[in-house]
Image (cartoon, rainbow, N blue to C red):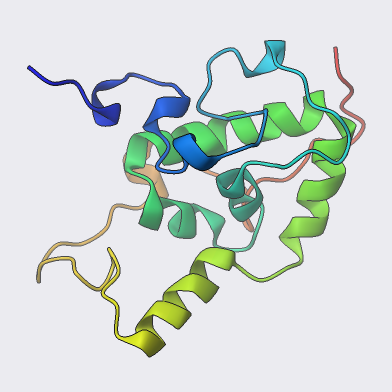
Length: 148
């Protein structure tokens, strides 16, 4: 039996960007709090996307329900742990969605996306289906949270 990323309970290997990602902090990594983050280092693309308005749905379009739930579950904790990440997520919340922009470009080129290739009658789950209730607008950094 061959085990793939979807067989992992939780971990960075569940991320479709895992092999090319250079972000040291991964919300899918159970030991993210033991990792090091230096100011200015890359952030997880899904973590920054989750900070935006409608972030849950955008993240769920590229990740399955369980990893998307981990991003929303761990995001506020990560933001509270590192002031640089908290500051950058606040800034990211005001920018447009990169996932939506990529989907728009693919649509212009005629490339089918996961959303457009879903069989008729299949409806995507909502945040309540995965037990996640993010604040409106995605992840919000916890004010005054410090690394501890």
